[in-house]
Amino acid sequence: MKKADLRRQYLTTRKALSDTALAEYSQKICAHFFDQVWTDSRLTVHTFLPIARQNEMDTWLIVHRFWHDFPQVRLAVSITDADIYQLTHYELTPDTLLATNQWGIPEPIAEDSLAVKTSAIDLVLVPLLAFDRQGHRVGYGGGFYDRFLADCRPDCLKVGLSFVDSIEQIDAIEPTDIPLDVCVTPDSVVYFK
Ligand SMILES: Nc1nc2c(c(=O)[nH]1)N(C=O)[C@@H](CNc1ccc(C(=O)N[C@@H](CCC(=O)O)C(=O)O)cc1)CN2
Ligand SMILES: Nc1ncnc2c1ncn2[C@@H]1O[C@H](COP(=O)(O)OP(=O)(O)OP(=O)(O)O)[C@@H](O)[C@H]1O
Image (tube, rainbow, N blue to C red; front, side):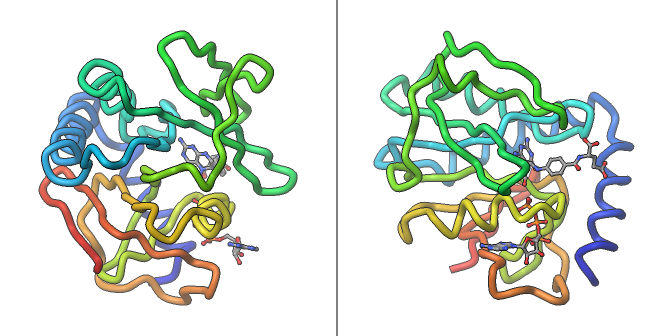
């Protein structure tokens, strides 16, 4: 199936999720991530912060678990520059003030935050709408994560978080598409290599 069709279909599916289902799926994904994916050698972890109106995975559950149980881990989140399709990264602490951008994404305020270099990131939690058996993904179509992941260290672990199971195959994969290493769903953890 083509990316544009998948995007439409899975945006509709996700927007129809009840608050109860959203909370249950988010809790299951969070539990699988800590039980099966994260290891304590990964000290700088990048996450997205959820767009509430898009019913994205509630990554705040993961953030709070890190703050509470693993305070040695440095969390990083991005500011999105839509003009150049670039993400720049900053530390996220319990004291970080956030402002919501035009897409409903909570972002730190650059002047008040410590910058984090892409090369320092050990693990990235990747937002997606759908993924396939090879680890390819479909996002909102901006190519923000393709560019970001291309700049990450080769040993940086790319972890997709998905409410749905893998589909057979995403068509028309481009050379710029960076595959995931692993994807966590409410029911399973899928490794691609
Ligand atoms: N939480 C989160 N942060 C993220 C991403 C993401 O997918 N999730 N991104 C991943 O790359 C980047 C932002 N990408 C985006 C690209 C387009 C739209 C957008 O056009 N939103 C429309 C509605 C889209 C629709 O419903 O069809 C809007 O808000 O009006 C939003 C975010 C960086 N940060
Ligand atoms: N490293 C790159 N350099 C230049 N263009 C790129 C790069 N990566 C992706 N693109 C372009 O960005 C566009 C959107 O890519 P794609 O449809 O894969 O987005 P997506 O993965 O769904 O979105 P996102 O990464 O924002 O979640 C494509 O036209 C692609 O060619």
